Amino acid sequence: MKYRLIGTAALVLLLAGSAVRLFAQEARYVFLFIGDGMGFGQVQAAGLWAASQGAGELCFTDFPVQGFVTTHSASNDVTDSAAAGTALATGRKTANGVLGLDAACAEPLTTLGERARRAGCRVGVASSVAVNHATPAAFYAHRSARESYYDIGLDALRAGFDIYAGTGFKEERRKGDPDSPNLYDLFAGAGYRVVRGADDFPSAADAAEKVLFVQPADAANPSSLPPAIDRRAGDMTLEQITRGCIDFLGSAAADGRPQPFFLMVEGGIVDWLCHANDTAAVLAETYDLGRSVALALEFYRRYPAETLIVVTADHETGGLAVGRGETAPMSFDALARQTASVIGVTMRLRALRDARPGETVLWDDVRGVLRESYGFWDYTELTPEEETLLKESYEESFRSQEGPLVRSLYYAVEPVADCAVGIVARRTGMAWGSGAHTAAVVPVYVLGAGAERFAALRDNTDIPRAIARAAGYPGAD
Image (cartoon, rainbow, N blue to C red; front, side, top):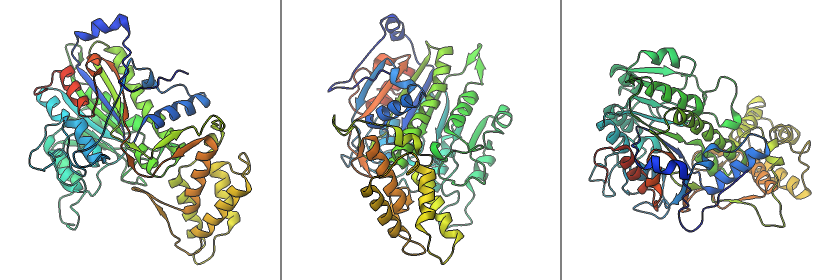
């Protein structure tokens, strides 16, 4: 497997036979994939992990144009997803926590989705998390606070894009106002076909003019799809969401080919798992995003002269270091044995509590969960020091009926589960620098019409400008 390391300047590899032809083309079909929290370490490690499992390379690591960009916001060297999403959507910096407005919250900024719509394109926004979460919201919302979920949902309605897809809405009614109109009802009333679940999508969306594509109402977590490593039969996936969006946007044919469209797809759970420093789950989620990119690649092969695919990240999360030096060789055996995310393991441990209310959960029972979830003892023999760490974390977890939790930005997990993923990372030869966002540069991978415009990228604000120029959107500077 080949990996290209990015040096101190953007690396541009253009295939000589296709470069001249691409220079003259306009991008009619634009795909922008954003791996939330996905830095170079996450991409490289996911590729190495996939190769060790015989799963093949991440398809976008072979794209002919590659580079890196800085991600700082207008208010901080370390951005949040709202400011970074706004930069990727508008080409302008804003303050952390702000969506689609300038840093003073005085001027609405025009997004790529809005520019595409004005150019007569169909527009889709999709994510593995809630439709009104920060990154997808940055492509249609104009709000001073990313937590204004209900109002952000109203902004989606006002933007009127052709398809919104994700897990659903976070806060479908205005917080503190149970009598406020339900967002799903408002979308349905505005002519959107609300499609719940992938099974019903093809028939339900076939005759629809606009679609809201979300999880079934009984999904376990309304804010997030299940992490790829926890996925069970019947769970909705980002790949299904992406395929649905492509099929819907590409179904309106004119002159024997689809109408122009712009589609943004976010792999939002990468970031959530990076906050928890869950190495195996992060790599599985990164590879899962690659499956969605592969669908865009299929479309590109049908319309290579008119399709542009851009893969990037809003920021890096966790400070993932791949390798611990030449004296500590990397091994993916421990990752291969992990069958659940730190969240899935926490749920299993919580089930032990619920099964024995008022009683102490036994170490042997916890040991059984760890054995099943991480392969400890059966496949991964632990050192005495690792056993001691797990036992101490067990005692911290279960010294009371409720027990303390280790909190990251999106998750609260059992200390013993947190300890276990740390052991897995060390066994693999990786290290996490933090449980938060970092100021590290992030990668950009580009294929297709107008790809040469991405040769001089330096900052995340350069990406939407290059996309707008390649696609001929109005107002592109």
